Length: 147
Image 1 (cartoon, rainbow, N blue to C red):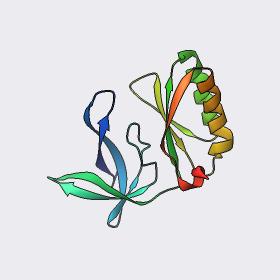
Image 2: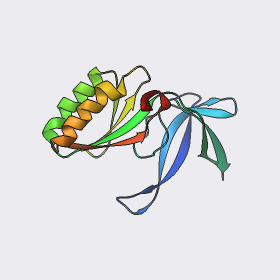
Image 3: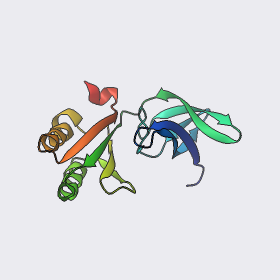
Image 4: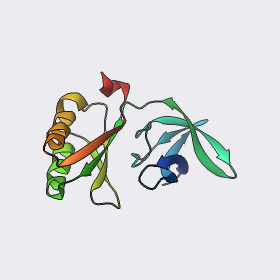
């Protein structure tokens, strides 16, 4: 990725009970950076958000959110792996991008600003939750999707 840099996002991993760092690509924009990845573990950031960074010993670490992109990020954990492909296809058909992880039961979902999260994606998630097929977390919901 030409002209892109890796930014470190420290966070506390509840399952591991320790500090972790998620690394994401970002594109320099003057004094700030635009995220080019959908976070898998980190909360409060989404694809396309503009952030400031601090340089610590030659590594770039996230400092703060400068401007949200309008994208939102959710995570889904599947209790019923038979529902994974169905759910991934349905969410993809709604215009969302799926990020697979090294854990087959976990995916991250980028919800672009044009997608009607509350009336299309959320009902699908709630159906899966009621049927105990999945759990989900709203890791970062933009102001576009929160109303």
